[in-house]
Length: 301
Image 1: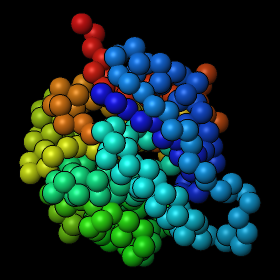
Image 2 (image 1 turned 180 degrees about the horizontal axis):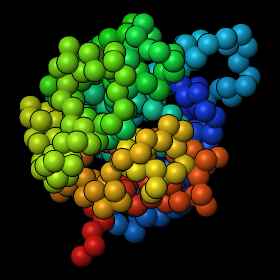
Image 3 (image 1 turned 90 degrees about the vertical axis):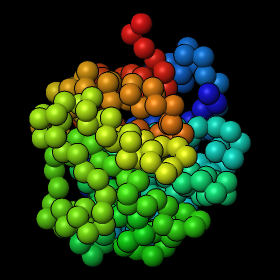
Image 4 (image 1 turned 180 degrees about the vertical axis):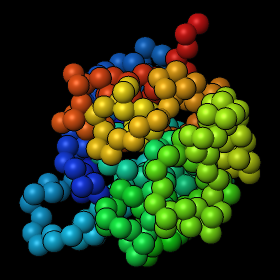
């Protein structure tokens, strides 16, 4: 494959600082080298220009960052759309998860130009289904899926052309274990598919991922995988801002992305919320690089 790496040093959507250094941590962990060793052609497009959070004036609440985050997402959407048009699979390195409102929108836009639709698999401990009106914290990294479905702030929800970027029946969450009341209600009313950690405990990861791939792939022409590293249990991935116990094991995480690779439907991927400030010897970034390798075809044998 041709893979285009795009770094997005964005931390305005999160309450804890440090995820803006995530793209650097992932590059230090040799993400480009790993993909080239698998035979892929890798073009590193560098980092998007993101304003320094400390340089912004008059920010009294997390929602005050929404216009700036939206500008970053609009530029990211242009970059991911161009990558797809040029035959590349965008690999977006975050940064906080609010960036997915742009990365997914851009890929959806490029596919729509071919009369195609996009499926979305969301690997995350959280639902990210809040809107500015429903959020208890105002943190925008808890809102990208709602906006990709056309809800919430009009400008952020309208980045894809046409909008919304994805249909709810094509959106699948895997490994969720921390939803607030509004997100539970939104998941039901929006009509997305949610597989929690209990589903994985009861059915096994393989069965859940088979269903996830069928749902995200039905009526679509490619799948975008958006992976928040806090999807993995914090014992394996300590360097995240919002850790939740009881996540996917190391092998479950690899099996999930290996199955995505086997499907042949992966067209784009985000890897977000790596926080080097909270990490131990860059082990979370190294874990993330391993998962990216598996998603793009690395095998044990």
